[in-house]
Amino acid sequence: MKAAVMGYGTVGRGVCEILTEKNGSLSAKCAGREITLGRVLDIRDLSDTPVKAVWTTQFEEIVNDPEIGVVVETMGGTHPAFEFCMRSLQAGKSVVTSNKQLVAEKGEALFAAARENNVGFRFGAAVCGGIPVIRTMFYGLAANEILSFSGILNGTTNFILTKMIKEKTSFAAALREAQEKGYAERDPAADIEGTDACRKTAILASAAFGTHIPAEEIHTEGITAITSEDVSYAAGVGSKIKLLGRAKRLENGKIYALVSPAIVPDTELISGVEGVYNALCIHGDKVGDILLYGQGAGREATASAVTADVLDCVRNPGFDETYSWKNREEGRLIPYEDMTLRLYVRGYASDVKTAVSGIRETFDGAVLLERENAPENEIAFFTGAAKERDLRENISALRCFAAASVIRVEE
Ligand code: HSE
Image 1 (cartoon, helix red, strand yellow):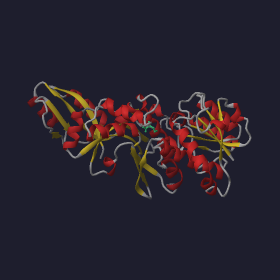
Image 2: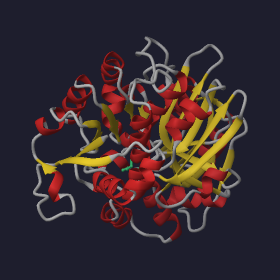
Image 3: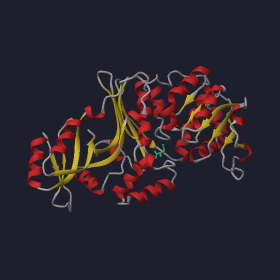
Image 4: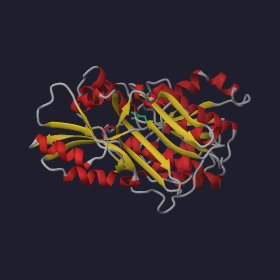
């Protein structure tokens, strides 16, 4: 069987390299069925690259080639990626993509087309780069009800936070380095504002709970408001700030999902996940907690996941119902503010004594925090546990105090 790769960017190039270099060993893993690189689609000039012999700028040369059985989409974005994937599925070709935006936004339509044409549609590389999180949820944990997951799903932001915490690098310099290393999205706002982690959370929640969870329904906050003051207060209580994507199935069947920075105690394994590495903790009703860890971005790691999906399509070219979810159900997500949690709050007091006594009176179990060289009017504290909506109302109502930063505490 031949594979076509659409998009010769960071990931596409990695897939071409693996398919070419490992050709023999990959075929051996498909019961001897050969898998070769048939076409590479890109509007850029590839005449000076190792794939020049199979380069095309015409999608028609892929969709009309009967020898091509698997189409790999590593273009990014939804147009024309969606149209090309749909036409490939309709032409009886399996599709493998690393494109989380495509899966998060168009998953329902792509599953329907794959099901109708009895071909594969796989996207293991769309979440956590090289870590096999999707296949773990669909296959490895098949005996479980997945009750919750929580993870570091974006390598760029974890790389930036690690550089800021360990090397005191500025936000801008750390982001530039992430871009140079090929970790960041084409528009890095998607990384730092949490959109990328939100799409991944939506895909994971859909896989975990079996129903399409739209990314736009998940409340999302990025890392752009994190300051060195917050990093210091977190360090003072043996914790780090991480951007987390998490979701939970409640006893009444409703789903809670959220993407935001969180203060994570160093006693949690996830707190030690540094640089471009991602980690996902999944809680299943039978298996308990499992933790998956590895490189969440980068050419070879992501291409590794794409290639594994290509091999699945060679071995099992038909549609796999286990590797899918049902269409969106109205009212499955609860408002994020209904969840009970603790908040970290940092702000400034016009009258410190009044503000502190207000904090103590208002928040049962409040803990005041300290850091070196804090201005006299700066106050930071943890609230006790209560509904997020109530906590936020109470923070706004504090006398002589204006909050500058509010971060959730991961328990
Ligand atoms: N920009 C993404 C990240 C790439 O940094 O995690 C991998 O999805």
